[in-house]
Image 1 (cartoon, rainbow, N blue to C red):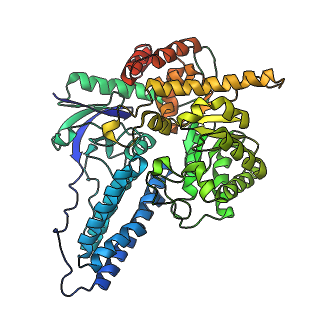
Image 2 (cartoon, rainbow, N blue to C red):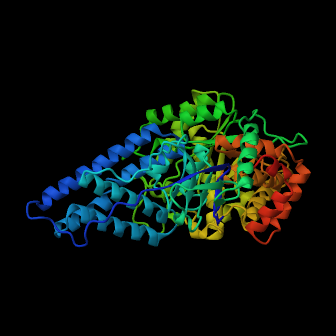
Image 3 (cartoon, rainbow, N blue to C red):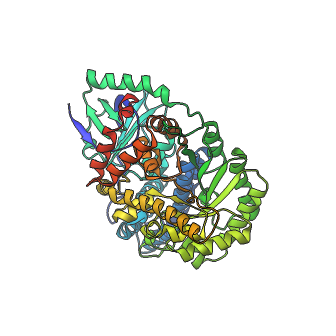
Length: 572
């Protein structure tokens, strides 16, 4: 028996045979030139046609996906005809390279540039190399490497998975995901959560697993074990027995002493919202509006935006829907809005900051949100991503007021926002913690890199301290309001909409730190609700302060899990 340890990104225990992703497409011979019968013009036309074919295939896949998967596929489809990639290849064709070799070398160049930029852009390098292989396959007239087929359910093992593959996995065939690379916020991890697949990433050495051999995957513990025996089979049996207890959320998040804690859903469009409503989410804590923009070469019309937003609002009539304005930039480039030449896009013009470089897009989006809200009875709140200063918060609030939106808020994703939350909340009505980016920026660790997974962990005491600082800032703002004679003395809401909210143990910590709501993938709602109901607020506070005072993320996690026997009882 041999064990591999990685990062668990979605719960579940399963035993199944290993199937490895097929080997990547072989590279064209180095220096391969145009043959005598093919002109540069003909090769260029073939390359453009192949790119268009790949884009069409990925776009078609996107039409069958939802939420995170749909957004990822749409962004990857755009890359198949990306001017930077195609122009680089055409230059090489004009110098005598074959179309296959030109796109191969151009892909290497673009990928290397993205890796050198770090942050989100480094992760996009995987997408470039995937698209490159698909274009080469189209030029050769052969299928691109795909997820293997199997007559029986299997555990998919790969170095990493391309977004185009991960987004359309069939959960009835692929029962767990294991990757040697990636990180807890990689595309593979995010889509695994949305599909409810047990998954372990950043598990070094798993490439050596024997094809067809049974392994035991524990998505909560982040382990992969070969030659599973009676203990592992018993663990699977317990999980299957307890998992039924985690299938349904009754629509009311609360602790054992009756303290309410709203449990909301993260959604990416109307279909997601309908599924979240069916899962009894108490509202939407994060509507990612990128779904309305990705895949467009120009800004969507007012009417198209209104229709898209209204579809989500209608699914949650009479309930809160928190809309995040366009979070373009970094790994979500838009040709009409973002600058692809930025030296460090993760620290560049993204989110709210695009309004400084391309004014007008945000105001028009807010107008569309307001029109959709007027046509619905949902309680619409609006927040801006990447807010760093009170002045930015005040400017966003003014834009919301002009549009007729009365509940403006901010995302707390950078340490400056957490540390000055009192002043931000003087300008807006609520804050929502984006723990994915907050962790990345606090720890200076690219959230997509498996090698930095230990740093890029929301259990890091430094990150928990920033969350606590945000809540304490809300309390200080309320006290300051009282001192000025204002009537409303209650702290303004501070929620969490990052993936940290989907971890049942970490949800208890967040409750103890004083957040007012948790928003997550709908699949996580039952497990989070079940664990929260086993602790009182006082117990949650005690566990939270143990975590904040720990010396490391692993120590924080171990201390909290030791104080939550319900986790073992529920197989979490």
